[in-house]
Length: 239
Image (cartoon, rainbow, N blue to C red; front, top):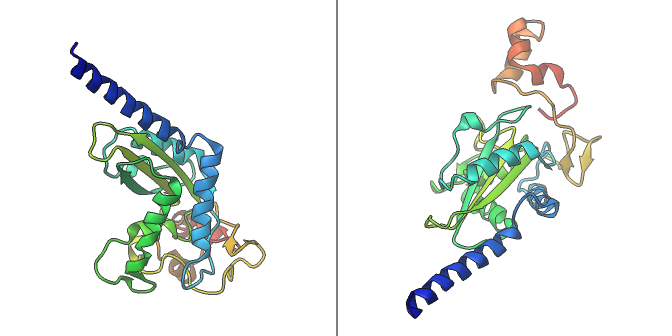
């Protein structure tokens, strides 16, 4: 092997070693990294404008993290199939972040939130720009998050970050109002932790018009009960 070829080989090995070392600091099997991700989301959810009366506090989901890691490892740089984004209690939404460097999770989550500059509550995107990452970060009902990152040396972007949110946000007919505007914890005065509600409903409605179905037909109707378990069974929880 020539000196030049040896030098090139050593350089490639060194670069890979540096990349792997940087990756270690953001791997989400580390409880400290998990806490960083959850704390960042909750900090941003506390400061939405206008304030939210029904914003749930987020917690780490090991199930969602496993799914996120499985998808991150594909290095696809695209969204996972929606039917694979599931945990035992609900489906999940997803945010993606791609970078040439091993950026911190704080930076990744902030990048999603920063789409707020193009968003107006009650209106949506003010200029046609993408705002769906922001709305998922602050979707009031998404109270479980699991994330992962993969090193993808063969891709244009070397690091692929995936967060999955359960239950999913970005419900089509509610995109302009990702939470209910009002006094912080207005909907959960007896279950509040620093502006965030701590009483999520453990059930999920199948349809967004379940409150209307409940009001019209009542939960004694078998179809309403089957389609709208959250509206029917959660009297004091955030639905």
